[in-house]
Every structure is written in C-alpha cells, then in structure tokens.
Image 1 (cartoon, rainbow, N blue to C red):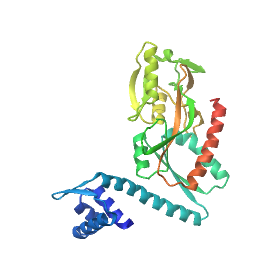
Image 2: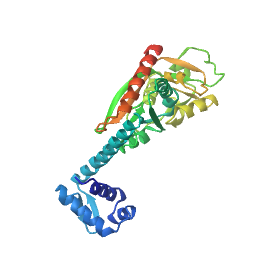
Image 3: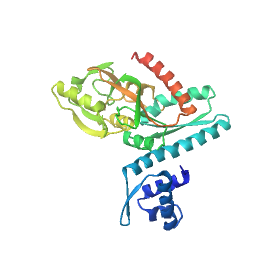
Image 4: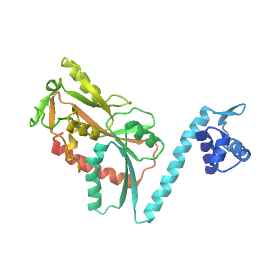
Length: 303
C-alpha cells in the first residue's frame, strides 16, 4: 500500500470533498482525483460511491479509512520511539485524565520516575471522558484514566483500583469532625454530582441509594471535574463525593472530608487504551510504576 496515497485518501475523507482536500494539500483538484483513482486501482477496492460531483464512502472505504488512521499513527509511533531510543531512551507518555488524578496519583508516579532517573517525559491532558475517548481514537493519547466503564469494540478497559468514596463538607458544617457519615444524614443538603454522557457512573448509584432511603437528593450542579466541585463545597454551596485518593492530592486545600459508610459506595479507576495501539516501552515503564503506587495506596486505604 502506498502510504502517500493513503494520506491523500484520508485528507479527502476528513475534508469532505476533493476540492477542499486539494486546497489543504496545496494541490489542484485534477491530480488529486487521479491519485485517488490510482489508489483504488492499486488496492482493488472501491473506496467511494460517486453520485454526481459528490463522493460517499463505501463500507470498504470506511474500513480503509479507520485502519489507515491507525496505520499512520502506528508508523509515527514507531519512528518516535526509535528517535527516543537513539536519544538515550528519552521516551514520552501521553495521558488523558480528570484533574483529580493529576493531583493525586500521577505526581507520585512522576516523582518515582525522577528519583530513579527514568528518562520519560509525561504529557497530561485533563478533560471529560468524551474528550479523553476522542483523543484516544485519534491517537493523540496513549492512555486514558477514567472512572466509567466503557464497552466499545475499539477500546480496552483495564481496572487499576477500586476505592471508597468520601463526602466533602462545607467548612463549619455540623457533621465536620465526624470520621464517617450515613447517606440519610445528608438528605437536606445540596448535592454536587458528577455527570457522564457515557455508561453508568457513580452518581447513578448515589441517586439510587438515596431513593432506597426515602428521599430524592437536591441536585443543584452537574459537572465533569471533582476539583471545581470541591471549590464550590469550600464556598458553602453544597456537598460532593470525591474518591478517597483525593487525600493524596498535592497543592490543593481540601474541604472537611468524612467517609460514607452507610452505604459503602466504591468507585473504580480504569485505564482505557485503543486495542490496536503500538506498544511503547515508555508506556510500559509508566504503567509499571503506576501499579506500584496503586498497590501502596490500596494497602494504605485498606481496600
């Protein structure tokens, strides 16, 4: 397969028309149309269905497009890793996660790599689960760390660790100072909950458990990120439910926390990767140390 022609084909798909792709590629339209036809002839597959001046991807064309993106990303990953190997094994890892993981888990991993002179540069992009999944699919991330479970054909989900959730209380709240609280004690509070546009998440469990106890929570805010909600809690706007690992946060002043014990609700941090990603030595090293840190956190939290 001619990689250059594959790039031209992908450009046409992503720009919508041959004329728009030609402008992006700094070409004229006739040579690009000719190259597309040659590409189809070489691989023996009809990529487009032509209706007048419009092009529509065939099912086979859609498959070539998806696998082509993966092939180009894999080729770039191989070249990048080879360059890094030549430059004294200086690797890179790109991670997408919620801000809370970037305040608790990841700093300890970075510290240990630095202490052991492991020459890896870590790129972290904070964002919502949809943002992370999109960047994984476009091969802009090596790893996603999310708390939802995703059942998708192109994704592989691996459990990292499970931990109990806490209750974050406003300063001066009557329950401040208690080591643990029951959900029923919170029935008159304003709830700040985590929203998710994918699958079942921890907020669904909280709402279900509230209803089992005879009340519907007064939800005043839905958000993707824990840290802004903790800031709102500190401002006295309501309560929220962070994971217990929040206590490991670096550089953030936490509001009063108590364990939620009735019921005990847990949340799982998952690693999400693309099934067809090329393996990178730097990613494997990062994950080895991550698992080491998580093992110690599980022992500390008794989970």
